Length: 358
Image 1 (cartoon, rainbow, N blue to C red):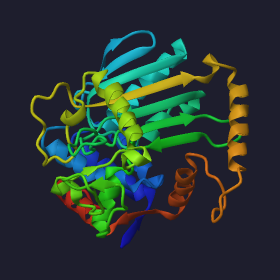
Image 2 (image 1 turned 90 degrees about the horizontal axis):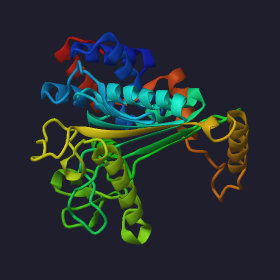
Image 3 (image 1 turned 30 degrees about the vertical axis):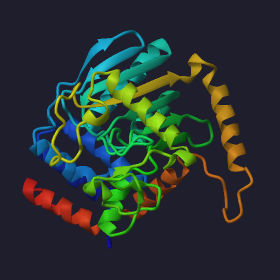
């Protein structure tokens, strides 16, 4: 059963929890806004359901609540940011702003990040560029849960990619996707509900397709986008690898099977080649390519033409990336945010521990 909360209720609770672990007012507000952006957009796997996980990482001394985030290397259009083991929810907006500032001066800005943690939904960070008439990109590596095509060993994370593109009269194009068939958070939701995973999401310890949503706890692995070779899993594997390299090899973070796990109870891999998780951000000023108004007018035309594409039988319309999340945000800001009862119970435990009421 779901319990519905207003955005304000969840904001106050989440902000108070981040303050309780030692975050500054500004960082607590940033972390709360980023985290709840997932819930309001319908990405329930990456919102308040993750809050207790961040607290456990802090308790395990794997998250620094008062990080000294800094640029450690830069050129006019590029930078490397060290997150000082801070919340990815705070480190990522800092780094994306660096990319935006560089794009203002150089036309484009590219920032790779090391020594960070889970940063919420990639789409939030990419969308930061929209208000500046820029195209935004965001990606991150993550805990190794995914077996490459033809393997039974977990080597990659779900490694999402997000791209946000401004338009004129139309709403922006916002693509935010894992490079796996499904995000790990979706498996966690199924586990809470006691439901099976669709065939093609995961494999068992021997490499056979499975539907057990708890298979990761039994030595299984998630599958790259495409599920198997015949359906293009080599392409999902390649995309996830690109994210890993851009985010971690380029920045000096830990990559591949050495990426630090999100669950605090999972041991950190030995002989890690870098520092923490890595992210990669890009910002491109539209007028570095063509006048912004002309570009946005043509984006409107592009969006309208795709919206008017003839739908297949059984479907009402063709969607543009970002449509479902935008519609969900309108609904949830008005009607409230449903939270699974098991997540509510977890939040109450966190609240009791931190002296914060839900």
